[in-house]
Length: 370
Ligand SMILES: O=C(O)CCC(=O)C(=O)O
Ligand SMILES: [Fe+2]
Image (cartoon, rainbow, N blue to C red; front, top):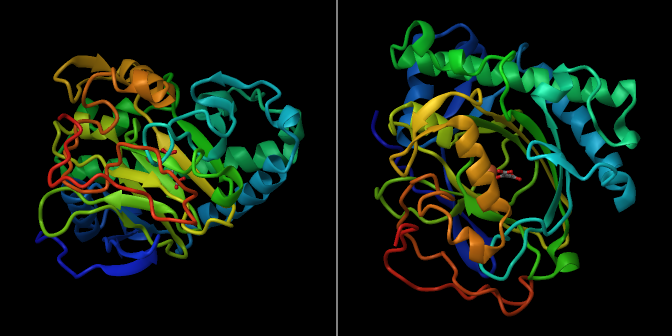
């Protein structure tokens, strides 16, 4: 299929015009029926771009949209609680628990910290029946909301995986679903994120750093602007641009594990979150479908590693201070994806983002492996 060469729309952000990238919209109902044209469409989106919108407005997908709304209500209630209530158990494991604002590197590189707080509930934990979640949401209503959101997200991701296996002519144990079984331990998790207004946190605690996901597939819901992606390849200007929230749709993207499992054929999506509106609270819900811990693949460093090891090493890199992150294997944060662009900052922004555009390093070629 020819690459999508539609001229991008643009939007004004920090005093300049920034692209809003267009992408394929895949229909969930058609995918559920293994419609051959839709299978080809989703496969090509993953091979060529690494992301797509998933239209969930049909009878099967609508349930997920309902679960998204219920989860949002739960998130509003949870994040309004005092820190002691939210942080009752802290971060129990990498994929379960609460992370306060500033736990990781921020959107603008060295010297910045992230600008979001996050609650994670893992699929393994919710399947055990009595998940360890803070008391404020440990009631049957809230647990039901979380169970529904995890169940719906899981089903949708498996449908996509199944279509991708079919599209790649995989059979039997080689099919991607077979390394994502519910009864095998994995770090699959539902992440609920609240980005504080950047005019409250200031320029030193801001957004979410540029990265690719550890996961096989990420199913992402946000009704608000802020997510930026860098389309892969050199076809046209491939700068960081926004993903427009699309009503009734999820934004789905490929992560490192599926890129590795596909023999590097699929693209892992480079993305970050920036404050679009400095006075806005932003809420996003991400389901990270991850491979069974003992699934083996060749990673971006050419090593034969397990999904569990890749997760643990990359999670450590994400949460390490900037200096230590820089010492991780060279391709870790971007999963081996190469980029050519001009927006990779080396210095912390000197002024609040709403007062002045961030000073960006100007280089023709920026490679994370440089
Ligand atoms: O908040 C978002 O929209 C994206 C979050 C994200 O990239 C992540 O948690 O890996
Ligand atoms: Fe991500």
